[in-house]
Length: 248
Ligand code: IPE
Ligand code: IPE
Ligand code: MG
Image 1 (cartoon, protein in one colour):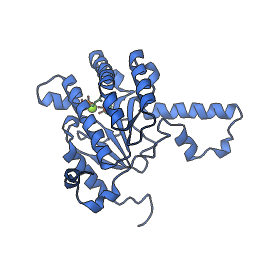
Image 2 (tube, helix red, strand yellow):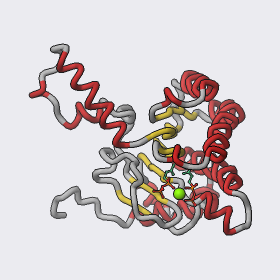
Image 3 (cartoon, protein in one colour):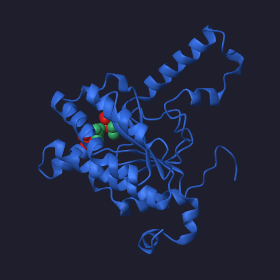
């Protein structure tokens, strides 16, 4: 780790209690643009840049996993022009950034129902997951067409099917079984959830996985969420007592 990096953090010892897995609800792109008199899509463009920087910072700090909410199952309800801009942006970014991400040892994984996304985007997603599957510097989960309730319904159906085929005894179903049927089966649960732009809600994100996650909400709009802001979130996290229902 570089000296410059260390200087941005609270102090050396606190590096020990960095979260292993950070999840982010990247909210406020539209409001950021509006405040500057720009079209909403400019906010999304800038937001994409913030995501790239956040991922790099996680890698530099040694945070193992970053999970970012990029498009929810509810976001299809936005104007067609915005939805198609976002789909085109995801595809363009993947084409442009894959090489660099691969060089930096990023393992990219998409979570959500990808089957209804534009074919060309699905191809780029599959390609980038395949190319980076053996990387280990930082695990990057991007939630696109993701909805937690949809994810749970899908898991219930798959588990029921196993039971129907006689391959699974209902008595043996436990919390791990459920976790293993979610898109996030390969990752530990997030330690820290960050939501930008002030909204105090989960918006259908990782409802099962966030059961004991520490939540940090900031009024900063996502495009303005820089390293300093991230450090603030980390410092807030480091002050929390994670009791998990016990008495400490
Ligand atoms: C988050 O920013 C990006 C997506 C949901 C795709 P918003 O587009 O929700 O921005 P606000 O909340 O309208 O400001
Ligand atoms: C949550 O933001 C979804 C993403 C960041 C992708 P929204 O802007 O869609 O959430 P609501 O509408 O404020 O709940
Ligand atoms: Mg929003």
